[in-house]
Each structure stands twice: as C-alpha cells, then as structure tokens.
Length: 113
Image (cartoon, rainbow, N blue to C red):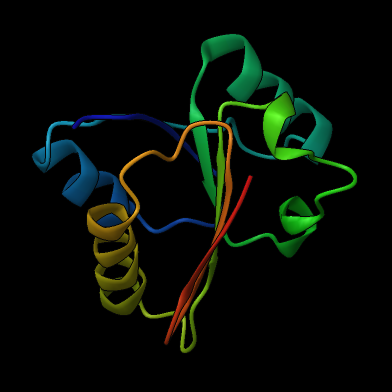
C-alpha cells in the first residue's frame, strides 16, 4: 500500500529517498513554519505527517480523528539509518495509518486512534 507523506524539516533526506523508492508520495514542510502551519498543510493536502517533534504526540491538541495521520519518531540515537529502519518496520506492521497517531520507539510502536 502506498501513502502520501509530509516530512517535517527535522526528518533526514534518507527517509525521503527510501519512502519514494517504496512508491510513496513524499514532500517536505517549508523551512521555518510553525506547528499550526505544518498540521494545516497536512490536513489541506491530505498527507500523513512524519516528525521527530514530540509536540505532535499530544492527543488533546492533535486528536487522531482531526488529521490524516501523524507519525512521531522517538528513536535514539537519531541516526538517519536507524530512523529509517524503525519507520519502515512500523509501516510494515501498522497496515492502516490514516487518522491515527503512531509513535515509534526503538523497541515498540504505539498506535492511538
């Protein structure tokens, strides 16, 4: 299954390349925009946001039903190779990411919504 992703500016280019190679549509957030603008871009373009910004893991501020989906990477160390590996593992496990908050850790994936 292919998805449409919006990558926050804190996501390495390696992830962009890997997602494109796997057939997903991917674009980056414009540089320097605030969180409200980021979520509005995701909503307006129907893109699942991928970010390392833990503010987006706030279910009260960003309820899962109110956006196309948010994936928060809480993987350490934040090496591009490790981030990409954990993201791809999660995408293989979680079959429907729409309208969900997905938090990816080194050792688990939490799905909310």
